[in-house]
Length: 406
Ligand code: ARG
Image 1 (cartoon, rainbow, N blue to C red):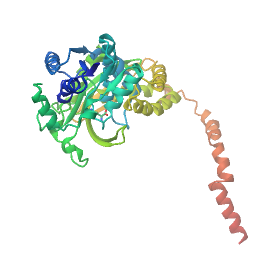
Image 2 (cartoon, rainbow, N blue to C red):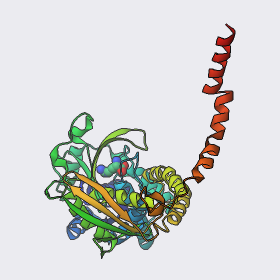
Image 3 (cartoon, protein in one colour):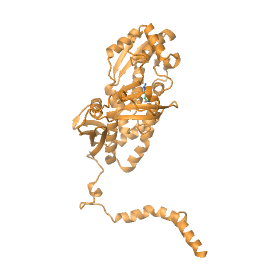
Image 4 (cartoon, rainbow, N blue to C red):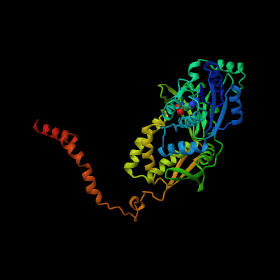
């Protein structure tokens, strides 16, 4: 059987290559996706081949990742449980898409991943595969082999698989252009403060406050300080700028799809800054009902992406809604950066609904104050009727009547 394995080049996926050959007699093709995590791709390819892969593919997905995965998340202001910008959850469907393409190209009948049975990533790989290629099998060797970390290291040594891992590796890390997830080690006690050493993208090195202006076109970030950039470059640059102020850290206990509460730390300097800016621009460019309905759906959208339903009918329908909602989300947002802080200090847009004449309290006021009298009276009429018959008004009247007769 030919199988395409999602390959990071780390210990587990390297052992997966050999193990599937030895135990299941597979022919293994590895697929590594560059989603901006950085890495020596030639060395990673060589490691896959040395572990026994018949082919090792590396796909540069950085542009696609930014355009088709990060941009929709920014447009949706999608934050799982109100906080997590879905860093790892975003890359899995993209990697799956490329695994399926590689499976077709090589005539493979299965795809495989190196996830354990406890996490969300297995869910995302498998459900995405079911959606894109229902005929393919999904293999998960790590869920079956029951090796400890020490045993995996021994296995690699025994089969001459060169790996960089050591027994005392403490953290499980996943990173890409949109951020970094760091878990395990002493952080498994949710009371423990994350050690300073876990942070990489968000170390405070800047001390002088500054401002950056982010430009959006129909909900997509397109420029920084007036200079247009491709999105993957814009996100990369902003990671540096914002990260230098230490902004973009998260420390949370999240509810995984498989029923486990887990303590997670994340860094997503550009991701969180862009969502903050985008969300702000929507406040001046979206009509009230549209804006409020979108706020209700954002949470659901984040949940679907987190749960591995990137390729699903509801997600697709919500994408249409979001796309339509972004028609006028064009303009600029000023972000101010201070050590450990990033916040919005200004926003503007050519189709902004902010009307100075309506909003101002000065002489330029164009609002017809007298219109409010009738409007507010009718707005409160139902409440007034309720109060008189069933509410506080009725109670007071009853008390008065009672007092009168006693
Ligand atoms: N808990 C996060 C998520 O579900 C992060 C997963 C990171 N993956 C990893 N192998 N460390 O999206």
